[in-house]
Image (cartoon, rainbow, N blue to C red; front, side, top):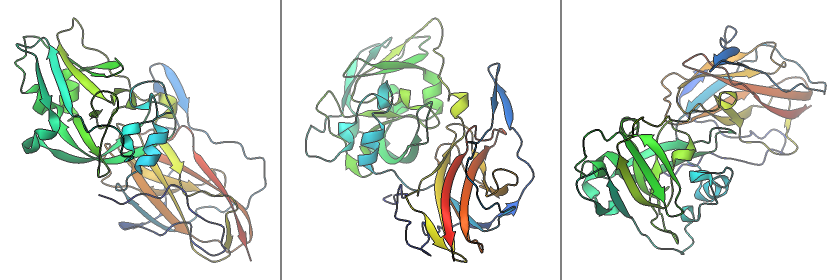
Length: 352
C-alpha cells in the first residue's frame, strides 16, 4: 500500500484546487446541531470550542458541496521519523532512525522472551513467515494532532506468546526496548487489540544501531505503548493488571486540515477542495462537519463505515461566488457523541 495522503501542497494559483477529490462520493447535507458539545470525562467537563476570530470574513451559511473520504493513505517514513521525536516516551522518545532507509544499522529481529514462563527463549520474528500479517494502522500520541498512519508488516504478539508455556495467573506483558524503556500492558488487552511485532514500515525493512529493529504496534492505543528496538518481552503475573493510558480528553477526536499553504487565493466560481484527517484513537469517526460562518451553521457529512483503528482522510469540494476573505472551520463527531474539543481552521481568499 503506497498511497500517501498529501501533507502540504501548493495552493497559490488562482482557480487551482487545493487537492484532487478521492473516491467514495457522498453529498454534504446540512445536519442538526451536533451532540456532545460538552461532555464529562473522569469528572472533568470538556467543551467544544473554536479560536476567536479577530478578522472580518465573508460568512456563508449551510455551504453545500461534494464530500469524499477514505481510510487509506500512509505517512511517509521521513515524516514519521520527525514526528516520533515530539514526545517523551516510547515511539515518541527520539527521532526514529529505523524509519529511514539510509543504509545504516542492521536488520536484527531477535527478541528474548522471559518472565513467568516455563523456559526462556529467543525468537527471530521475521522468520515466522507462516504467522506474518500486514496491516494499515494509525499511531497517535495522547495529546496533539493526528500524526501518523503506516502500512506495517509483522508477526502477531499472540504468535510469540503461544510459544511460551505460561505459569498460572500471568496477566501482564511488557516489551522492553534497548534503552530499558518498557510499558506494561494487560496481556488480554494486547491480545484483544491484535498487537503486532513489526519489522517493516511502508515497504521498508527496519534497521537498527541499538538492539533489535522490532517495534510494537497496537491499534486504537496511544503511542507511548509503541515500543521501539525491542530486545525483551516479559510475561509476568502481577497482583493487579496495569491500567491502560487513554487519550487525553482535551485532545480526543483530533481534526486537522493538511493541505494548507501561504497565500490561499482562488477565483470566484471555481471549485476548491479541502483535505484533512480525523482520528479518535478508539471511537470511530461518524461525521466531518464544515462551517464557513464561524460556527453559526454546520454542514454535516457522514463517514459511514469508518473504523476506529485507522484515521479518516476526508475531502470537501465547494465554490464561492463572492470575492472576499473566508474562514473554514472543521470538526469531527465520534460514535460515542464526542465533538472535536478544538476545531481546525483555514483562512483563504476568493478573487473576481
